[in-house]
Length: 150
Image 1: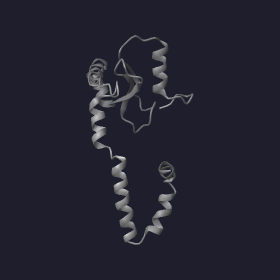
Image 2: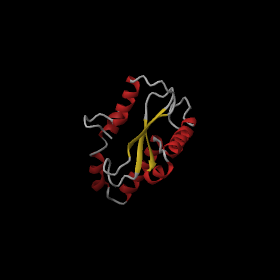
Image 3: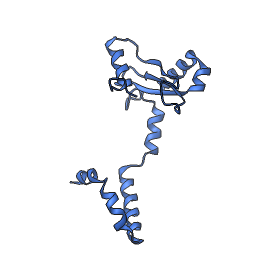
Image 4: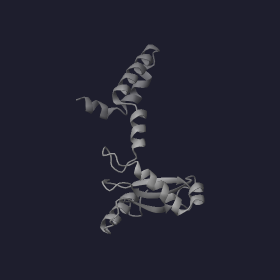
């Protein structure tokens, strides 16, 4: 999400909080957007900006399904954000919920795994005789990978 000046909305809110010398360890700017007129009509969430830890160097976009947010009210939403903030104290990435760090770690396909899968895929493509058809498409997008190998 950007502002009409094309600056990130979350970065703008973080800057405003900093310049306003807000002296809270954590904060929540609620809501940034909740009306379908303000955001994509298919986007069904209430959007807010949150800073979840005093040591965090950034704010994050946080969303709750619009229908749920409407039924909860502001106090319940603040309670939920506070609960998530309690899980955002890991110094690996202060202000980011540890459960999401852990989920990302276990869900991410690592670069060494990607290379192994690519090697197997390219081998199978060669075996069935269509490498000449596929390789131009691969070469059209792998330039940075080649530079990384140099």
